[in-house]
Length: 288
Image (cartoon, rainbow, N blue to C red; front, side, top):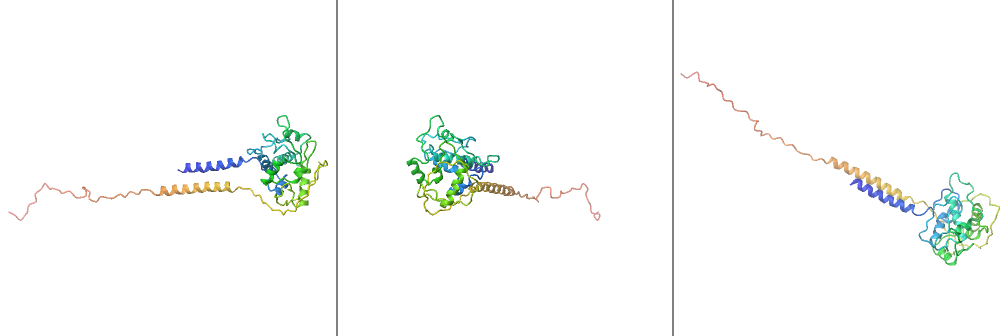
């Protein structure tokens, strides 16, 4: 009984862990892109995955290659990824995943032509391609799904196909401070959390072309994202409690020994003394 119960609990925990792992690699290895998570309320990889899932519901962020581009626009419906916004998010996600010990302290930049490689996974370019904007139907879907795409993702673009992580980060932090984090004006209903930390990293020398967009005066709403570890800890507690209860039940069961009462029979046939017959005749000396 006990081994079967433990196997059931272990199976449930294993299924939970597998389901959690199947959500895509959206966790950052370090704090290099923490500024993005603080401002938007989710990692850049999660935003990238949500954008791609508009066109491909089965898309999950893979483990990015170490060389740029880390991912490519290879969905059958390519409207969601065949644009400079998706490209910028993919590079932010790459920096999120590869922020490991021994990695580049200044992040990973994309060289000239990398954007073209991102858009041409099998030879020809994906289509329809848009730069500094999304197709109208994809933009509407982004707003309907409350996906927070900051203005700097639309404004920053390098015509030679490169991408700069430090310049992107510095521009985003500046925009957040200047607009009180109201930098999501491509969707009127989109709100965001407040970026609480500042980053003191110098900007790159080469500046991309930018399009200035007026920021709205919408009020901000702070969103705190916490790591959800409760189900895992709860499952382990249930497993330990089940083992303790089962062992206690077995111990009590062993103590319920059947006590056999041994009755003593006092009427044994050998308990009575045997009569002794004397071979001699005793005569009375007074008789004649």
